[in-house]
Image 1 (tube, rainbow, N blue to C red):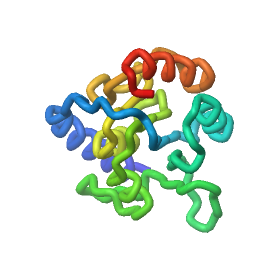
Image 2: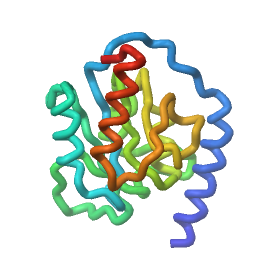
Image 3: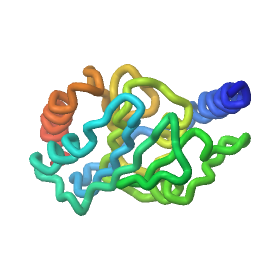
Length: 172
């Protein structure tokens, strides 16, 4: 347990040093593909969130979900790719191939659906090759291009505000 705190400390330190290199989004491309990074420690309604995205015009086949859990069990079978804090080494490098594939995929939109800062989730959001990143305003402002001021339980409000602003920005 104590070693996890030390690993988390080093991950945050490396992440803060890398946050100075954040680039602004200049893409005017419309949103087709969506990456959804969900913290299932606090939010369990990911199917309802996906249904809201589909109802707003995103194709289900264009949505890729990856789920973070605080308590990740190795032998348990999950419906979506799932990872935990033990998938990062001491050099802040991710060891899970599913997470690395998610990071390297060039999504038009990355939705970082977590409102509590966890070093591993911040690392994935920062490392993602997505063109446009959206998250909650309670998370570090340097990570996302657009922040929505609500909490994770209000997924309908989040999706409504997201698509309202995407229309204003001519992204959909």
